[in-house]
Image (cartoon, rainbow, N blue to C red; front, side, top):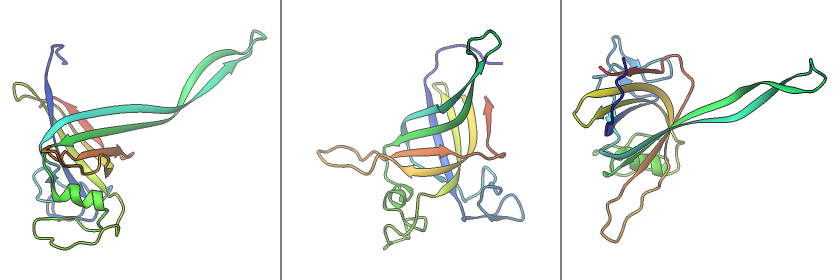
Length: 183
C-alpha cells in the first residue's frame, strides 16, 4: 500500500558494466543484457555520493486515430508510438567511473588503472541498481535497469567549487528491468 505523506527522498546508485565478470549468481559469467549480477556481487560499483537526482519519462511521438462515422473526422484515440525513461544523478565525488565515461575509455578505470587511452570506447551499457530512501532511512523505491550510461554534465572545476559529475542513464528495453515499492 502507498501511504501519502511528504518525504525527502535520496538515492544510492551502483552500476555493473557490460562485459565485466561476476561471480553470483553461480556459476558466474559476464554482465550483459540477459546476465544481471546478484545485488551483493563485487561487480557493482557506486557512482558516488548523490546530491541530486531526477527521473523523467518522455513520450516522443503520438499517432492520432480518427473516426469518420459522422461525416467529420473526429479524434477517436491518440496512441503513443515512442517512449523513453531517463535518470539523472549529480554526485559530489569524482570516481574512476566518471573519468572513464567522460574520456570514453574502453575499460573501466580503477585506482590501479594508471595510464589510459581516451576516445577508445563508447558510452557503455550497464545494469543500474537504484535505491531511494526517505528522510527516516526507509527504503521507498528500488529498481534494476539495463541502461546506456553517459556522463552528461562534463567535468568542471575551479573557483574553489566541488567537481560535480552528472550521470544520465537512458533506460533500455529489457525484460529483466524491475522496480519495487518499499522493502
